[in-house]
Image (cartoon, rainbow, N blue to C red; front, side):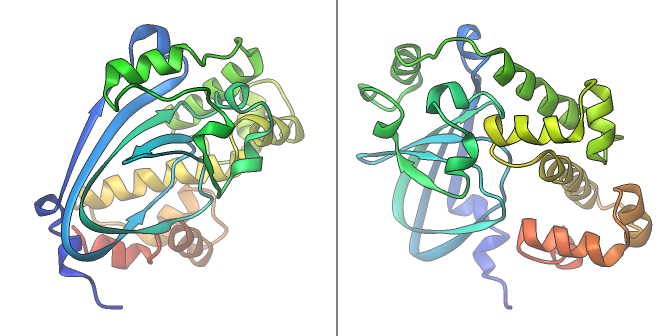
Length: 244
């Protein structure tokens, strides 16, 4: 499939800003993000998922975006902007009031989860809105968040049984915890962050031994690695590497 030439020159058409939450909201919020774009012709934006639930404000619409289990495309057209809240992976269940898997691969109106709306889509007003909607602390949610952070910080973790042993639990208990609080399984989260490390190596221009890399990441063979990468990123590793 031929590339849209705007894909590699996206900075001409999009601007991205990020901000950290206030200290009292840091247990719940990973970051705020603002995206603005200007496209004279419709553009298909590839979005590669992480295990964050997002609350997004776009024009007069507010939505909760559950974790996507694979890549998605979103059409961008005209001149518009979105303000988003990325919640820490694992902490959204107390807001939602049910298992986070119930909104995986779904977008639901924010009014189903939150009361009221911000006065305007700026950080100060959004943080006041969040404070008015904070749930009671949930130790299991915080445990799920800590486990995801351990996956992020520890490249050596490539198997779920290793992760379970690290937290003195069983694979089945870990799977139930992730279903309730993260929205995707622990295996998915491990693979997502290990694949992120692959893309960082690509960005540095490192020569990559694909078969050896697949083995290092715990894959049975290169074909399984390629299949997982393609499902997550929408294209094969070698095609993705052409960006760099």
